[in-house]
Image (tube, rainbow, N blue to C red; front, side):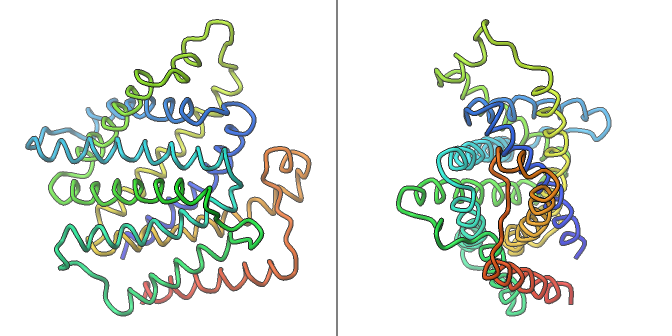
Length: 307
């Protein structure tokens, strides 16, 4: 069960990455396509690890699966960030977080022709983790609506497809070789954004505006953390049984728990800054008990998985 601990660690790091992403998208790099382009392009730096971890060229179909997984992952990030730009995070995050594990479970069931499924105890933990993940960020006044639903479904589906494809890659390839091929796929998708998006071309090649050093520093530091978290998440996917990849997605509730503590801390320590970037957390008595109950559900789900 080491994959559970690795997945939890990845989500703790991703909570910090999410906060910085929100800040950058709100204040410094408002265009989601441009933001995703930078993420995808920087992914090619993984090639510098080849002398340390090794690299192999598998059969063409395996190369195709890995490249597709990486490309789809970048595309899913685009829809996620686009949703964050158009709608409140409280509409987008719980919806996508709740739908991803369901799509993942369904895709694995279909691809395995019904052979891969969860045990009874795992199914209970799976449901509890999803419910906890949704409840901890759910607000009735800002629940998903018909405008935000299509983006949530698209982002969730492509995230799920990327994770499932990655698992099939790791079933046939060594972890580092498969991961490097996946990152190359993300890089190629970023290049497609550059070639086929006028917005990205305009922003990247615009001479009048220089990329501020402060923005570059924050972005690169955040991407280093993001890559570290992504490596851990992929490592967990590689180690987990095929059917349990959906549980790794459901464990995202841990990220929301940590994110809640961080936003509450920032709301108290830096209230003006938190409000300016949309991170201020104001919790009523009703919401407090709702989030407490959500944390309890997530905790029970983890206990069931552990034992």
